[in-house]
Length: 79
Figure 1 (cartoon, helix red, strand yellow):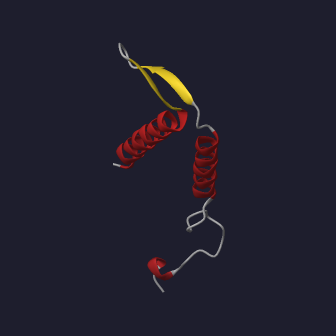
Figure 2 (cartoon, helix red, strand yellow):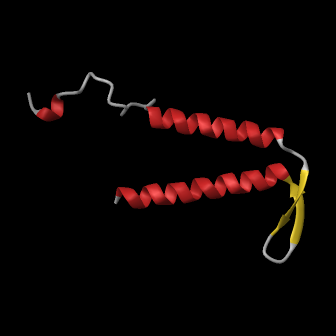
């Protein structure tokens, strides 16, 4: 039997529900709940213009920007 055929029976955290993935899923769900609860209008300053938008739009934009930045960092780290 070669080492490639042996699978570890222990908890290595490499399955579909590793602790890191569970943590990310919990944070994503909490973020969505937080966004859904905050729907009032806010004034946002974008360098020069001042824009009034619903808070959930600003939160979704920042959430997506964080996801893109995180994906970029983790993708660069793997290479």
